[in-house]
Every structure is written in C-alpha cells, then in structure tokens.
Length: 516
Image (cartoon, rainbow, N blue to C red; front, side, top):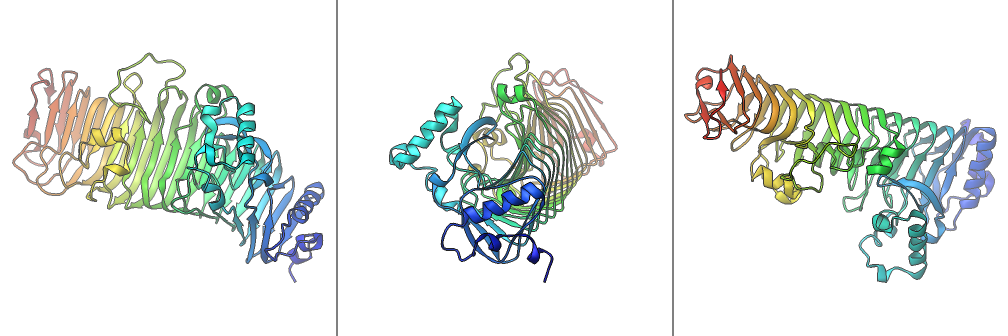
C-alpha cells in the first residue's frame, strides 16, 4: 500500500464515497482545511466526486489518483461571489471551481481529472437577459453593483474559471487533466513561482472564452511538457487593462514555456490585449502549434499603455495555422487612423525575436502593425521557414488584416521602427512575399523565396533605410524590388543573385530614393 493510501487526509475517511451521486463538498473541503492547518497530502482515490467549489490552502498537496474525477456542480447558486480579476479588471464574480487563494506551498498532482462541466454555463453565454432565471438576474445585478462597470462585465463574469491561482506563491500542478471549464480553464493571477508540468488542458472548440492557460500579472511562471486543446487562446499572457491596469502596475514577467503541444484554438501563444501593466522577459521554446488561428500573437491598442518587451520564440513548428506571426497595435481599431499624441495610454512592443521556426500550410506569412505615433521596434527573424500557400479565408482574420493583405499571402509590416529578416525562406503563391510600409529601417539578409514568377518579391513604401543582401529568388523577367513613397530614403543592395540588384522598379512617388 502506498504512503498516499495511508494519508490522514484520505477523503474517504471524511465520508466521501466517489459514487458520482450526492454532492460531497463538505467531506472534500474538510479534508482540505485540515490539511492546510497541519500540512500534508489530501488523497483522492478513484471515483467521481461531485462537488461545489473548493479551496486549497497552505502547505497542501491535493493528489488525484488515476481514475478519480472532481466534477463540479451544475448549479450557479452553489458558486459564491468572490473578488477576482477577469478580462483585465479587478471585479466580483462567481467563485472558481477550484481555487488556490492567498496560499503558499501548494501542489495539485496525480493522474486524475478536474471537470468543470462547462456546458451548463455555456448555455448562458448567448442567452438573452430576459431568459435568465430570476436568481441569475439577481446575481448579475449584485455583480454590477459591486463592480460599478456593468457595461464591461456581462457574460464574461457570468462564468467561473475552472482552476485559479490567485495571490499565491510556490504552486505546482503536475499530471492532472483540466477540462470543460465554464470560462478560462486555468488562471494564474497576481502570483509568483508557479509551475505547470505534464498537464492536459482540454476544452471543446465551441467553448466560449475557453482559454487554456492565462498568466495574468504573475512572475516566475513555468509551463512545460503540457498538452493544450482550447476553445480560445491556448496560452495567454496578460497584465491588466487601460487605466486600472496601469495603476495596479503588476507585470507579467519571467515566464518560460517549453516542450508544449497545442492542438486547435485561437492562438498558440497570445500576449494581450490586456497588457497595460507590462509584459516582459518571456521565452517560448520547443513547441508545436497545429490548427490554431494564430501561432504567436501580440495584440494591443491605443488606451492600453504598457510595454511588451524582451520576448524570445525559438524552435517552434506550426502547421495549418491561419497566420503564424501577428503583432497588432490596432486590435479592434482602424489601421488607417491618423497618429495621436504619445502619452501614458500609448502601448509599445519592442525586442521580439523569432528563431528556428517552421510554419507549414499556413495562409498568411505574417502581419506586423505598430502605431504611427509610436512604431514598434527591435523585431527580428532568423532561420525561419514559412510556407504560406494554404487557401486564404478572410473569415479567419480581422477585417483590418484582410483589408491590408488585399487577398495576398504576404508578410505585411507597417509602422515599425526596425525589423530584420536573416536566413528566412518564404513560399507564397503570389507577390509580394514581404511588404513594408512606413518603417524606419528594414534589413533583409539571405532571403530565399520559393514559388514561381514573383514580381516583385519585396515592396517598400515610405521606408527610411532598406538593406538587402544575399538573397535568392526564382528567375523572372519582372522587378525583384518595388520602391515607392516620398519618405523612402536609402536602398542598399549587395551580394544578391545575379541581376537582382538591377531588377528594381521605382514608382512615381519614390523620386527622392537613393538606390546603392
């Protein structure tokens, strides 16, 4: 018999049966409370344990044996009101199914399952307010009064997250499966030193707001060897929204993601759009993303403020991703809007590096758009291969992206300080492969273009300085480079395939351009 089987906090000793019939909340919570008082392990043997929300306290290991399931109640009245943070704001809402709050030295381990039975809650998502049960209307009115931001809460706060780690430190989750979350699956907020290892995160594709793992204003977070199949963003990093997020000022920082497998979802790794408290020092390595709308996605907009900086993405393979690389400063905004004054509400993205990445069977090579009043800067690619020959589907992307791609598979860059491509291979069925607009500095070194008859391969418009070296493209009689825009200053070409340096087309707006 294992040591766990003789644990003084075996839930069967507290009266739990695991027969899947009656609610066993009292037995489970008493075991957890006693363990938190003295330290140790709460042992959950095989069986199905129906329960209302649970809390895990200090110095507690919750161990779910293989064959055990915590199955949370299909009853909104069983979920008390708690203070938490959702969608970037501190606000009141439903108690998470499983909550670690203001605790230290906590572990959730084993091969068991934590099931939120989210389908009960998803039915409320698109339901008209008039059809809500009377009791639910009263709860929402309570939330509105407590939050004083009724227009922003609505259905987002209507549903609890499955597993939340809040204001806690030294928390480890390993081995378990977290599935069918009413809202976000796993939410790490205002916490420090949190590790998720060898975890399965599973939500159906139609789960509304069914994010996999949300890291929210937390530091020293490690996610490794984890499988995620989410109804929304797979791994999302956030730090608050707009003025409140800047006032709270708690960044998401020192985050590593490695050896993870993402299958389906809106994005493999997504940063924002709630990033007003800053996001920095993030490393993502040795991961695969399959059938996600985006691969790596950074999204923000005016009014957010905050800085996203010092991010590294390395050794990643993507397949059947609509757009593998997205940095969008115009989230839910018009990309053609005029510049506005720079102040604390102006967001910034800088020092983002992509290395050793393969993206196959994708639709759009990439989309980077900073803000004209504050271009994003320090963006670089090296040893990246993109095969953007998958059929285009504008319904998979934002209207702004679709309009600016103009039905092209292009890697499109606008309003950037500097961007560089080194040893990058791009396959597209039509021209151009790379398009730059309103960028201060572009460096292309060792571009290899695959496909037939691309003319031009590269376009620049209103780009201050362009340097192109060591490039290889298929033979064609048309231009290799098209240069336009009255703000374009210097174009330097060297060491390229024979004749490329001569295949340059200047448009009528490029009269001040110097080609060297």
